[in-house]
Length: 214
Image 1: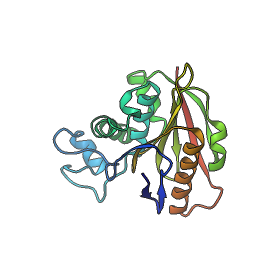
Image 2: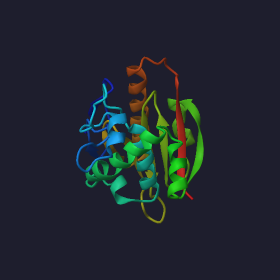
Image 3: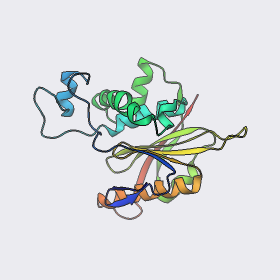
Image 4: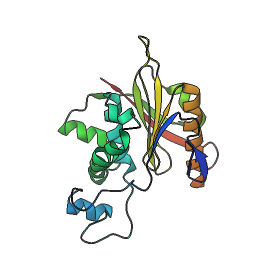
């Protein structure tokens, strides 16, 4: 199922998807984050609304990476993902965004509740070079794509189990792939669409941080 996002039709190679739109912001009101955080992030239900709702993509992506690397079914199962997004990722993501708002939030979280992940590579690269940097085994990556964070990952493989690949964009949802080539094509298309929508030049670099379970 293709999704129109960043001026392009994306995720057309996915064989399963959980489409979520318009939820990349702090959950407010009863059952949401506390009032101070609501105010700072412009969440619905805050006592004094800010001029806009702040996206919490970085926090959502960090929380998803932890769940994915630890094999949480909700992080990779498109059927269960909508509830996981609404009740776990969005809630945790609001606090992570409010505290720091970038990939290093995962280090702050580790000091409070050890998450058991290690970095498996980080840096900047052109979009077309990213696939050559994928680690072996199960991994997830935080991609910084021009003021937006998305998560990608690989799980399974070996002992008769086929590898599966996922893209998680907080503006779009979760998309699952059966093979590396189709996954890579959609990752590239997503990053290029984001680049074009932000007016960045061809060849502009994205940032990446790969994580694996320790």
